[in-house]
Image 1 (cartoon, rainbow over the protein chains, first blue to last red):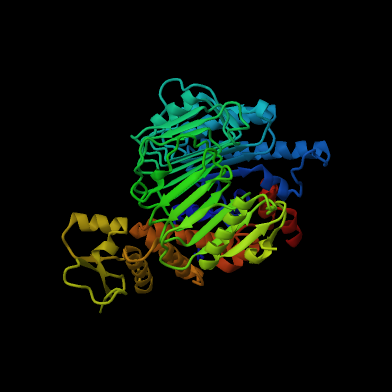
Image 2 (image 1 turned 90 degrees about the vertical axis):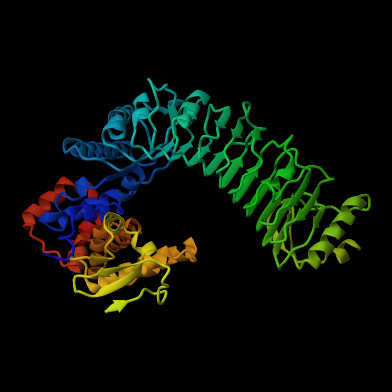
Length: 420
Length: 167
């Protein structure tokens, strides 16, 4: 027997699971004992772009290649997909990981995915389901409600579809740990039905989802990671509010939400907090102190409306980024002795005060607009001089962007320049 | 022969287990390292015996697995360090060594090591022509040329033009 073929099939499957669908298929040619190993491996990966690449076609819009060629490719792709899945179905095999990416939805494709999604999700015991569909929002594919019966599901990733069909009875995502929805149309009711049926959920990611207005996660969950990203609240008509009552969080990242509420101030495990374009009208910043967030290491606050003053007293913080403070009279007071890197980006020089720091740390200050230090702007000028003094004392270099264009690195001595 | 694990002599306080390979050599392993293997954990739970005989794992492979288990049982090491240890652990290893390792981790049920080794083996096969894999892994091609052509025709989608030209 040769060096590899004598390995048990389960191990061969494990090895093949790291290969792409066509790489795995190629192994059938190695020898007779390899003939069908690939067709029973526990994961399926059909990515249309790989298919096009392999056939030297690129997905471009508008399509410049002949239409018939594109159509031929699509038909071939779908027929191989159908044949492969049929093979799994006939042999009653289970699939652990299912990954499908389709670049253009037409009626044939929809029929096929409708047929297989429910089989894969409910009958084949799939653990990781990743469906990526590229289509126009008005043509989004609506997932059949039978998907809510996928009991064995642990990770669910969806891109470009609709979750609007209400679950017939209960949602059965008992084992779901990761839920990632990107450009998915889903309403509050269905989202809450899903979340409340997942006792083990640890990661929730929502990226540019339509239809959500209130996101609530109550304290029965051991959520560790929460990511939310959307267009800024001031562009959207119906902004979204987020309310998470979970103390187990390690990472929070919120981009562009209308309101963020956190009923519990004390988050003992929170390591990274990133708030971008969040409305912070009534958000008291004293919650950032070490008493409430004793493990916080990375903090980013960028372009949050209502943020004028920032007082930070936290011994665990290592990386701090502040961007776009409101108004000319903004104030930042920082007491973070373990800071390693401080970054500030804004239109006007901030008024920053640092309390004690234990060791050396880096700073990057970027002023986006060309700051005009005219004679009439004494307040700004003096503030800049103060900042410059502080930065110089802290051994910091100053970066300056002119007209928001190329950032010109200039460890410039503003004191002499402005004194002109 | 009794070998202590890498952290030097074990203190009396720490519970340890003796594992014997199929060559008859014995290895002293701390219990915290041994229980990272699901099958060893089961054996230890079932009987009080501190000597475990593994009839299908040889000296060399067992020593490697134990080095892995001891490193991962060390609470003093950060996850990053453990991850880079994993990388180091499989890099530059002969295919045969990896094969025995993956078999051993399958027997001992060490999921994370099994993952690392299987991934390494897949990386070796990645982007390689069928002929290369046959040569490298010493696989005897028992297809007739006609059968081979037939398979290529059946699953034509899996082979790209470059490979067809190479044949």
